[in-house]
Length: 335
Image (cartoon, rainbow, N blue to C red):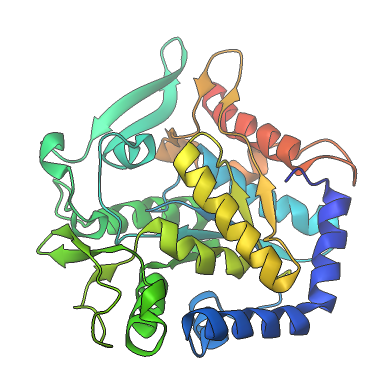
């Protein structure tokens, strides 16, 4: 949704006043429909219980590209613009698998570095894995770079350089797995997904699910499909504690899963998840960016102080603010 700064502040305040009712509605729905117990406790353990508003950007392996830097800067700017503390939180899913067909996942191993060239800003590609075709289908958390680091550790180092102690990242792999396992063992097995993905060494294999299977957890390392876990995932963004930054809309299947999950959540709670629309790309006079570029380390020294804040008051759309910040990060390469 397209929120202005003032609209977002009022929306957060309204939801927080209604948070107890929303919390009970979520817990009741999860137990009534899926047999899931202690859902609120699992959310609290996973996401924490801070009152600081969380601006969440969900990508399988969080890194330090244009989009992530802009999200971090957006949270800092919203703190002043809304008059309430906000921080960026990167949501990961390292249990997902690699595919070259996904531009974001590809950028994790073929890094588009943004730097200063002889004739101005330039982008160079650096592959941190020597044989890309061998990565197809490997679990992201099991990929090891040519320097011997796991892929999450490599990008964590990049984020440490960019954000320092201000970095907050949460991997949701265990959250999704535990919801599935509890449903399989204690819940309504007829509402299990039609398929799951079981880990097999560094890869995974798809396994159909028999709704009449005995009540028992799946083998360790199981991953539910997105069309099943989106329902529980989107419940994280109901009570005004956090919002999801989303560029969803270019994939009809994913958009359909989101739409169906949102409809069920709204029917159960009377509320829709708090989702903030953000740009899928940003352009300057020298580049049209899909936001996957990672600024060179030399560009990150004092980068937040060199970034101009968005211009506008409470009526400024957050979409526009994010776009201005993304352009600002791109222009760090201009000097």
